[in-house]
Image (cartoon, rainbow, N blue to C red; front, side, top):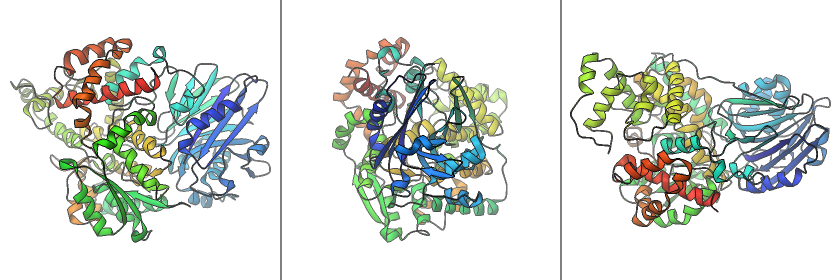
Length: 631
């Protein structure tokens, strides 16, 4: 796990070494163990590549990057001073978990114990299609001197980040925006991307390919990018597609396949030359991962980590059940308001573009604690998106049921004379909304839901409609299945929860690996009948059968509780609310419609659940603005 950066400039006059060193310094937290720089100049262009290393595999100097490969001599080059002899050079962030299987499959002779070498040699054998062989998380850049091109790639589900700036003259990339900002001062008011701001307030995050700045983008998950250095042209394409939804109604076969996959996904993610631990929330997903780890490790020596909260938010009793059952070396920390206050200013450095998921605060804290004991942790991220773990997946299933009702009944239901209520999901107002939504094209489900009361700018409607169309195609036109796929590929994971975990963990030089994010699980999920994922009331039905012999019954049968601290209550205390009211005028400078929405809707209904969320997003946006724009 590491940080990568680079510059491509169509001039040999620019001194790139100093710039690459500044980029490395800006993301040094991602890789404090080592750093490297490669510079290449010819009459047409200059290239600089930078890398900061968090040593996980082959802790020797042979794991150094940038790493090169001399094809004719079949020789790996891991010394910066000798990279001019290489034909292809890579900087890479991530882990290819199946690198040992690929070494055997393609009969590769290796000089190092790294997966980086496997990437280089498979690129030489297979070209751009090498990524189809990889099972892992990655963002990498390969400079091919022979072909005058640069090959960039991001993993299938977007676990690892990749930002790039391109203005037609200069291409700059980095694992984090702060790497680009180290050499390009684009963090100015006039460079704010208005559509990205609208998406942030509507979603709580900024989805790929957008970033907060103009001319700056994220490479999308499952996407390759080729930069032709002769023509200066960029070509992008998706190298992987989610299979069509084709349910198999053989429960025994599905349970057997799911369990086999679970054990293999955990096993290959435990490959490491440094200590491995696990996050443990007491929920199904992280508890399952720890339960499977016992087959491959002595749990009495396994370090596990959790966060607790006082009062109704606390999952400590469930965590204790799991810890007592597996008897791990457990580290538990109660996250308090003082911890939140200590992290407020740091939050906008960790998340260097607006990010509205406030559970990033305790995620940062648990990562900080874990780093004291281990360098790698396994997590349960992705289990909900694979097996149907959210209430909106249940609601999607209910919507499919409603859509089967006669049209006249749905029309009557959409006209129910009920009082508006935006607090909670179990109320008649939202039932009336469900009837109304059942009458429109399901592609527009998110675009049209509670549209009079929520932030629904045109870019949000366009983005959600386009993504839902794809998800409905992959879900055989079942709204419940499409909503799960929407979460898997676009909504909850790639630029939301995975951003939260990547930035919080890597700010502490900690690598997080998630077995449920194995792409084989995503493909497996398309075989599970939607009614075996959720029904009108329950979630994760098949998963509970897969894991019933792995966990104690109290955990297998418990309901869903998100990793959500009482942070909303803390943010919405008077001292922070006053700050929001005082400073929200900055929205006028960016988007007057948003300014008016907050003034006329949010501030006047701040006790409603929906508007409380918008206030929190505004608070975090203001903090980001003060850190990066008005600093």
